[in-house]
Amino acid sequence: MRLGGKVVAVTGAGNGIGRQVVLRLLARGARVALVDLNGDWLQQTRALAADHADRISVHIVDVTDVAAVNALPAAVIAEHGQVDGLINVAGVIHRFVPVSALERGEIERVVQVNFWGTVNMCLAFLPELRQRPQAGLVNVASLAGLLPFAGQTIYSATKGAVKQFSEGLYQELADTDVAVTTVFPGNISTDLSRNSGVAMIDPGNRKVPATTPEHTARRIVGGMEKGKFRVVVGRDANLLDRLVRLSPRWTT
Ligand code: ADP
Image (cartoon, rainbow, N blue to C red; front, side, top):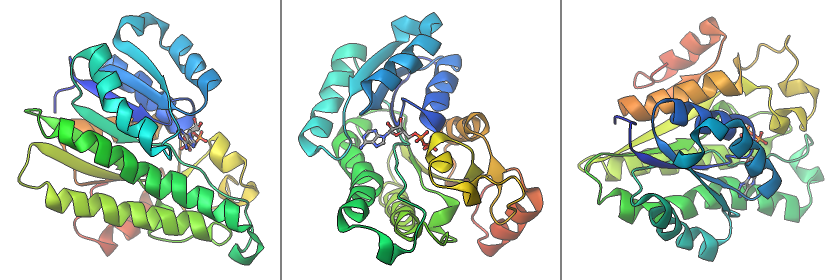
């Protein structure tokens, strides 16, 4: 999918990976609808992208709010005239503790945002994307969706669910003009991982590949441009190679 002139909605646009995805899409010539529940953070992203203010719209939406999500495609089309792409980055983790130490409400929130948020957005946008001659959908899962992290069991489960949902959509939409890509970031130092405790961000932790929001964003946007099936992002080439060999369809 050529991004010049295309309109792409990005969730989680207020911080971390999502913010870098926005900046990357703008650099590639796309128009971007920034979606996040945190209005202050959205304004920070907008300020960083001030050079491209005419190609940005801002939408304060909680992806778990079905009514608000269902109203989004029309809002994006009202701003930009069309919508060609959706990138689902919004996500949350929980406290870095065994699952039995989590409150039920904490578990439900992670399931709601990571799994239902992705499903809500896809259901809302797919009818529009299917109308376009060339469309792209990217869902950000995690290597945790393949190799669960101790202390992040519910998070890992939701990312496994995102993987299966996204790859199921790929199968369903294989005969359409909507390319579906699933991205598996490795160990990233963002607010999300910093808030979770040291294990995920310790540079000596080689259990999962380390990468950055900027690098991940380049791979996410590249995955959309090239219509890749899967993108795995990480810096530890040896470990990635081992993971990739587990599944011959993986793209590194
Ligand atoms: P990462 O970039 O590693 O995915 P961050 O915590 O840096 O993690 O960014 C996640 C982004 O997702 C934040 O901007 C946050 O506000 C956003 N987000 C979290 N929950 C929701 C939600 N329910 N709806 C919309 N955006 C959300």
